[in-house]
Image 1 (cartoon, rainbow, N blue to C red):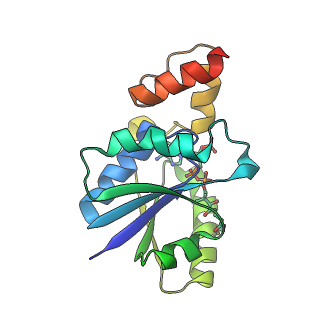
Image 2: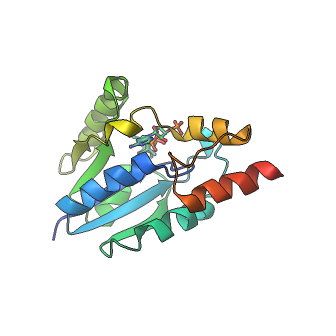
Length: 159
Ligand code: COA
């Protein structure tokens, strides 16, 4: 059984992330979305809120689960007997960061492969930060996030 981990901060999950996830779900028997607590990034949503926003969007993918993690990604992957890490490459500008992260993870755990998939080009300029910025000022983010996330953003910025 081939198991991959899809890690990220997911603050919040976007349609671009979901596109990557759909592609990973076709390639692996089991996929685990791993939500990094990433306090350093100053997330808007708590780890549990991020998990709760992801879960309803996985209902059609029974072999995909979601959980949080802290500490080293490779340790989480080994503890969950994963074969691979999956990451999305939206544009060339992602490459350098992803390349370095993949090599560092390989240095830390040579048994673990990192695989890259390209999300649909309509999401090439989507990022959680931009989505939050648009939502903060009342812009329409319906193209970029699933409806439950758009609603959570509205609530968060209505305060
Ligand atoms: N569609 C839309 N947006 C996407 C995307 C896609 N397919 N893929 C990435 N992004 C965006 C994210 O929204 C995010 O935007 P933001 O910076 O505005 O929030 C940005 O690209 C990068 O996010 P993400 O892919 O979630 O990565 P990350 O940098 O948040 O997460 C970790 C990186 C958590 C996987 C990494 O830091 C990690 O493994 N940490 C654990 C500690 C560790 O092991 N460190 C050593 C690693 S070598």
